Amino acid sequence: MTNDKPCHEVKIGRVRASIWANETKHGRRYSVTLGRLYKSDEGQWKTSLNFDRDDLLNAAKALDSAHSWVIAQPSESSKSEE
Image (tube, rainbow, N blue to C red):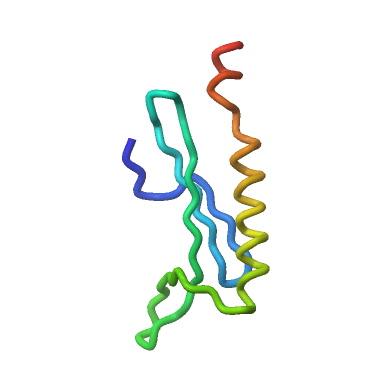
């Protein structure tokens, strides 16, 4: 499964955690990418992998929310038990 878009996003301040669903032979697995949004000099929105001091708490909160979302997803093992 090739994903062009994340299946879920968490945005807190300038920080965005993008959650990606990946189909494997063991079932669906999730991965998370973390970035900081900023506007370039040309006015385009871009993503940086660097975080300022003021972004760190928002990054931690975004990762915590992403973790909660992933944990809340049905597991493959619970599907097979139904």
